Image (cartoon, rainbow over all chains, first blue to last red; front, side, top):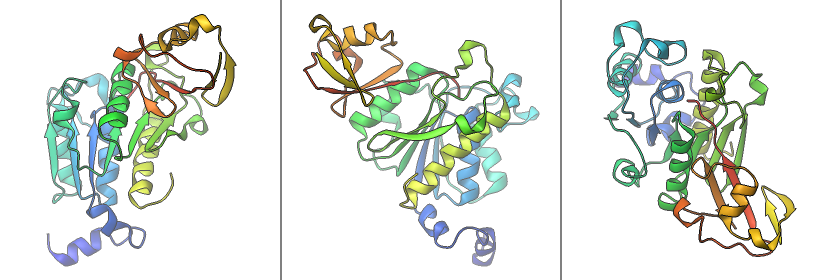
Length: 208
Length: 67
C-alpha cells in the first residue's frame, strides 16, 4: 500500500492518534466474542501490530456474537481472525498463537515488550489467572480485563474501573454466562468496544 | 481484626486471620478471585499460608464467566 492510500485510510482518525497507535503492539488473550471484536476495532483504529492467542475453532454457536462467518466454521479462530483482519487492514501484522493459554505458558506466550494486554477469555478462573500473571510478571504493561457481560442487562451497567495500578476492569461484575443468562451480540460487542476504547485511550496517554 | 476489603472496613474474628479463611468466610471461589493484599497480588498457592494483620487492605476481584 502506497503513502497516499495509507494517508486516506486514516484520514478520519482523531488528529495525532494514528501515529501513536501505529507504534503500538497489543496482545489479545482469547479470540471469542470479546477478542475477535476487539481485534477488529483496534485494527480499524490503526494499531501497529496484534498478537492473538486462542486454542479454539469457529463453531456455529459462536456466530451470535463473534466476528466470524459461516464459511469459517471449523477453522482455528486465530487463523480466521487474521484472514478477516486482512480484509480490513491488509498491511497489519497479526501474529497468531493457536494455544490453550494458562499459567503454564503465559510467560512463554506473552512477550514482555507488548504495549498493552487485553484479557478476552471466557472462563472466570482463566481470567483471574491472567490478571494475577500480569500483575506479578508483566508489571507495568496495562491490562484491560472484562467480567460480567452476560444477559440483556442495560449497557450503562458496563462500567470501567481500575482496582489496581495498570489494571482496568470492564463489565457489570455479576452477570455470568454460566448462570444461564446467555450472551447477546449487542452487549458483548459493547463490552468489546469499551475494552478497545479503554486500550486506545491508555495508549494515547489518556485516563480510561 | 479490622480489614479494609474493597474500600470498606470489616471486622473479622482473630481466628480467621488467614487469607484462605477470609475467602471462605466471604464465600469467594479461590481460583476465580484475584487477591491483592496491600496492593500486591497473591498467588493462590499462598492463600493457605498468607496471614493478615490488623488494618491490612484487601482488594478481592471476583471474576465471572463470559467472553
